[in-house]
Length: 105
Image 1 (cartoon, rainbow, N blue to C red):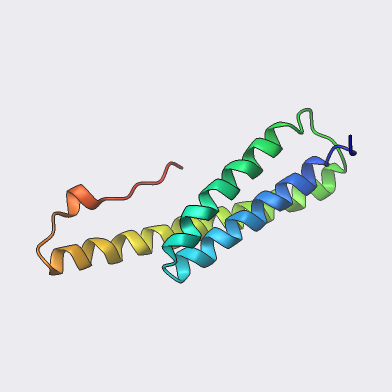
Image 2: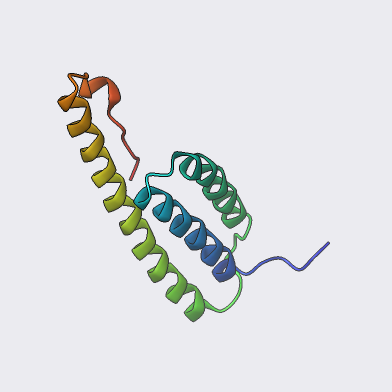
């Protein structure tokens, strides 16, 4: 069995997965979003396995700050995509309420 990952390295992996999701959102890449969801869930599961916190706490604090930036970027890009979809559906006479995408934050 390998050496367990530090909490900071696991947070870094989660941030990388969120950055991939943000890139898929920015490019309106549906396949990337679908596969990215599974990658983010796997990274979150790996993070849960690092309890209790292990490794350098200063490095962890820096990674968490970068993670916060990535989460904010995903939220903003997701909101922009949601607005675009809503306006597009309105333009073709679609029912926006039935096509609303919500994220949990």
